[in-house]
Image (cartoon, rainbow, N blue to C red; front, side):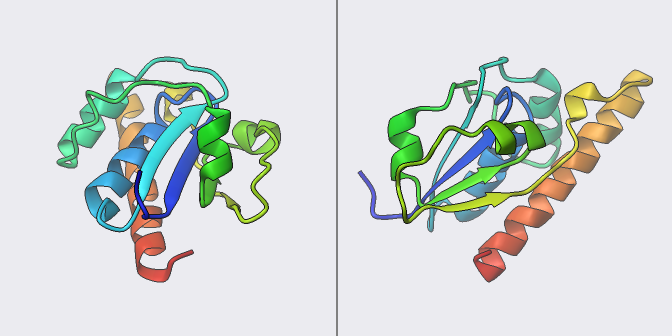
Length: 141
């Protein structure tokens, strides 16, 4: 058990965006926060997300794709949804002190085009999430 605030990143499938956010916050702020991520469903860890995070120097290859755990959800200090579907369908949070935010990002897994165009979308979303994590660490919001 830790005394660090718990941040719970939520997405639809816990395969890309929430995994990227989880990886960056652990890499950049694990001294300040306990970090977990989950999805409304578990779609498996997207190999492209692993690849673009490796390019950024963060290894998420051992992460697992998990379904939202009500116990973690209700002890979280921050619940941050990363897609509209998760924001709209997030389970009821019984903790009245939780801070709930929605940081919307495009789903890179839905990108189309050549392999390189799809990877570019993953990189774009990765960089946007990293910038948002850095802003949160600097400003606390």
